[in-house]
Amino acid sequence: MLRKLNVTLLAVAALAAMMLAILTNGCKSVSSSSAAPAAGQADEAMAVAAGAQLWVENCGRCHSLRDPASFSAAQWEVSVHHMRVRVPLTAEQQKAITEFLSSR
Image (spheres, one colour):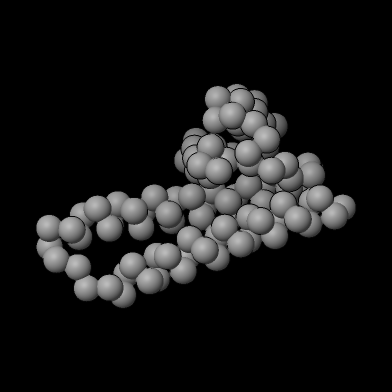
């Protein structure tokens, strides 16, 4: 139970940190030449944050959530793909969860 709480708190903290980074970067003035990379980073952070939320909501329903660093990116990809059949996840949700888990 404590392990699940710690991992859930880790996911919430990661989500909060990403949202703070997005808000902070969004408020900075940027020149037009550097706007594209900042937008790309914000989009990536939003995708990872969405993956974290999906992971907690879907995977945490049945599993004690593992530390994302406990598996390699390839192992997470196989695991999430396998669970997509059991849990009605869309391809986009599967991708978001896998990207979150692989980014840790």
